[in-house]
Length: 244
Image (cartoon, rainbow, N blue to C red; front, side):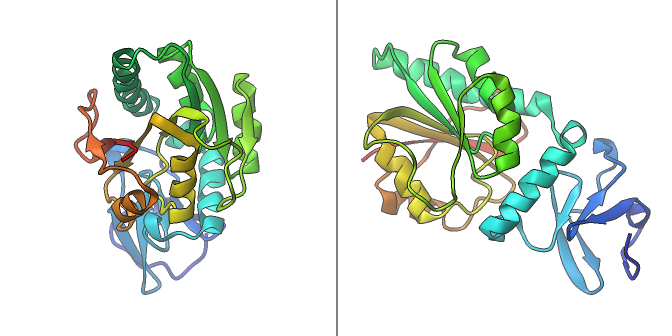
């Protein structure tokens, strides 16, 4: 670990710098460090309980997002809260089930946008086993790992056109993705590939990216509607967007 770190309490002794990111190597959710720390007169911001980034997560560049996501994969067994993920996805799929039953839709073509390790793919299919689901991610490492679920997973170059025709899909999930600053062009692509009854469902936590609602509106979505959570912390919100 690099020297010159000046912060209070025993967090100092637990930090290790990996690719420019400080990691609390204790990995104990009962002893998480402060929400931000000062290292060599620079503020670092806590992410996923144990990572300290040199800027808030919604200000990361695309390259930095991939770097953080791949570091998360490296320490997945230590940082992943499977119970929380399960509850987030359960809230989403409960809403989806009710929505498409109401619209009498028998076949649902869906995308898990930013599928990461593939956990969300498995959780979605556990709750909605009859949907046609594909995963997409900007990290090659994530695609390789998620493909082990047996679901078709594709790599997507961030900012490029999504590999679907206009109005091709009924549903797009984004599980633990939209806390990053997803650009207007990408949100417009999600709008393009959804049909008129399609929905975009996602969660955010802690801080909602400042331009998220603006980008959704400019892309053509109605204002996001909050849905009731299924036993999740109050700093987590789940939203559904439909087309105008």
